[in-house]
Image (tube, rainbow, N blue to C red; front, side):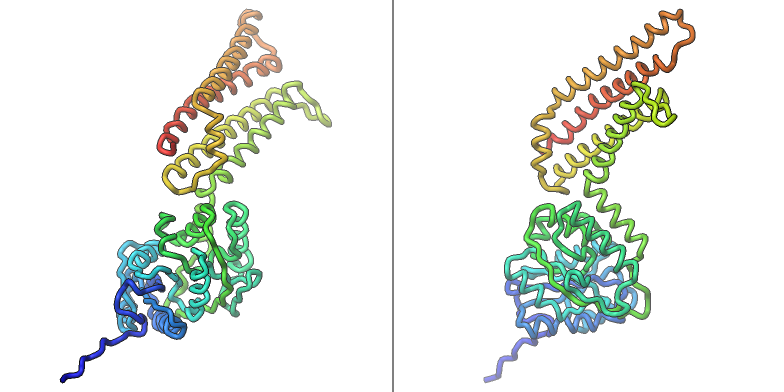
Length: 403
């Protein structure tokens, strides 16, 4: 009887059916021929030596240096992704992943895929996102020449601190690209960013939704590529990260600056209305103009905070906010219209009083120091009242889907 041939087992997988795969390692790739083979070998070895049932996916974003052939020769699954962008490449690779857990990491040999088992161990313990940490204050190690000075001492610490204070992120290295997560979490987060902000968006949304997050220390090695410089650009990508942080935080982008402007304007009114004089400086009608400008701009900024927060929640960009829900229970459309109408009537009353002062002097010259104390507050109240009426209706429209 002829002996039955056994199926050939490639290094990158220990099984033949997708249902048995536990871990998928996804490497975004754009012209990584210098280092791709090394990264795939390390990933395959990590799976094999730890007895992890897994696969390696190379998500190619249009390489022209033969990276595709290297991936196939190494036995990795090649997933072509035509839409350009770091986030797009990862989305394509993750969508094709057959594992319960996904480990993502760059293919430039700066991350050692032999450290993958540490991430898998945390995932098996129930954490849904496991972030690598390269920075020493989080237990990580940065090899000599592995991270530019500005990234190590300014960019990474600053953005990590912002992530902690703005979004309650529990990690020490927001920019680390080596991480693991459950595919179920990825699908639930509904990530939108197609560029380098993809990795940051994952951390922020997971933190905002209160997911179970862990961190493991890793070592960052120098970039192994020789044929081209790193894809990351310090100031361009730094701005893109800051922009993303601001967009995802209506509180810091709109509310806090708006509140500060209103407080500044009220202080100006407190000094200008009685004509306070401090060390030879008199605060008069011109101070009122500046104070009114601050109040109007501040109020508009706070309305934008409400607009953007309501829209982001209704679209699933941000989780439900109990504070906002309580606010809308009190600040109903009808109450907003009543408040706005009161401001309008008071403002119109002040303007009519100013016109009457003008009538009294036969529509001649006025005491501007006196009348401006009616005209400026009156105009401000009319503007705020009209703005509040329109904004109350608009935020109600935005909130219809949320309710």
